[in-house]
Figure 1 (cartoon, protein in one colour):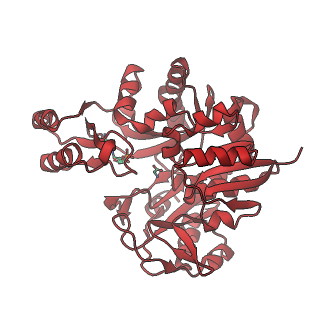
Figure 2: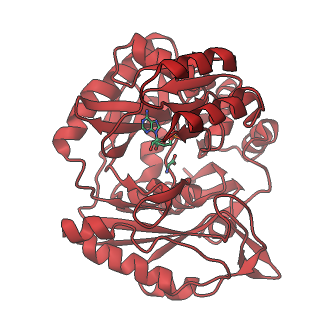
Length: 429
Ligand code: AMP
Ligand code: GLY
């Protein structure tokens, strides 16, 4: 049989890492990426098609026209819009949950009801559609709550309020001023949880699941985990906050009941289930689910995969995860994100990038995110631009190598966190 054709939907660093891993599979003949980025276009056997990840009809037409064997969906929006359901109607295998299952990420109040109904540990919360009710409830709370817009808000819909005033402002902005549009038609006021935060991601085939190495993300923009929340400025593995015992605990208390409940509700979960977990003094609690790979966690985790990603994703899509052997490298991995000037608040002018080849020659992997091609040159086009990953036998060596790779790359306005993985590497060499 000729090799498979895979369509990867999305165009960030996460999708570049997925495309890079799929392109290595002996079973894959070609990878089509919609819309992709200059990094995905440069991988062997890969090409970009200029279709946006949310253009569901055009993606279906492309998958049909190219006789695609498997569609791998990177971001959440097409999942929530029902891309996988539309592909199922055409009998095209897809890695990603149905719209009904993706509601776990698509609506935070839906997710909260699901967690409570199934006795999965999470923080207390209440939902409101009117600011008067929300503000009255706020006045009763001693500790300021976390304010969350219900729907998809591109990772910006969570305000961890330090004061009642901040929570008050956030509630009014979301419910009265429509700061997040329809995504903010409802607001959750959630109990603030404390403790180290871990992201636990698993491949899921509807019934079975396999937990991936748990990478730790640095979400804040500034050194020392200070400043505004971002999509993620870097990530690393292994993290001292997780061990096998903790992951086994999360498998039992979170993943197993979640998959069983979704299956029994007629919406079996296929794809990556990503649980954002806070390790509280009362045990692990779910802060959120995402229905996709994390970014930049993917740029740490997939390079550690010692098995064929295509086989795993196809097994998830077809309910046969038990049949594949999934191996991981014992190396440490560090990813440092380079972002444009103004990130996460504003976009900046395109700027030529120098030094990517030098970073690759130094032994790093350089995944593209917000890059573009202009007059034959790769330019930084705004947002998170590149993710520089290094794998080494120890976390110290991986951190050194990734930061050295970053130092070889330059573009006007580049910002990155020089402390990614450093504190952990020094404390747990
Ligand atoms: P999210 O956009 O849902 O990933 O949330 C962004 C960040 O807000 C999370 O990574 C946490 O750091 C923080 N967060 C969300 N919910 C809570 C909570 N209940 N208590 C404390 N921090 C939270
Ligand atoms: N790095 C966090 C996320 O992908 O949501």
